Image 1 (cartoon, rainbow, N blue to C red):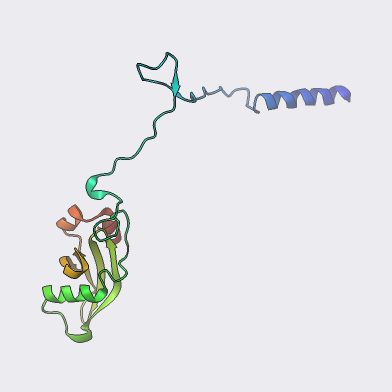
Image 2: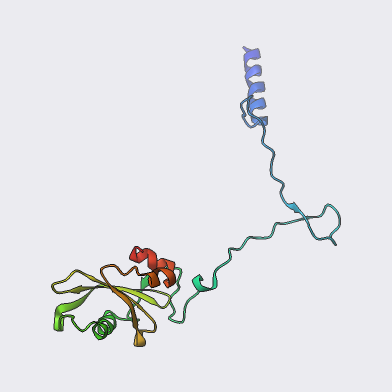
Length: 168
């Protein structure tokens, strides 16, 4: 009985020492903990930490806030900058055939990405009007409006986050 216990203890110890590898597994080489310095002035065999890799951001598509205060990296509600009423007003200036009074209403409040905005309006007797505007809330310009706002200009110049929201 003692020999069986001893044999089990030896096998268990062997398993712990080999990290329970199956006998047919081949040990993989471990990666070096650091890289050899490429500095010609460093003593031979000197080790240095690898430099961190930082992604390069394109200047036009950076995640930093635009002059409007909204980042181009994501889409967020505009919180009144511009308001839905400002978008309706600029749409009315560009499209004279819209119904007067309550015939045009904000269905989805404006969302912003950089200096771009996307709003969906309901129009009496028509399908929803998808509007993409650009610029400062006090001086909005309509880039496109209609049932499919994915024009060539929008696809080429709008922030990627806004394109994803609009399904372009």
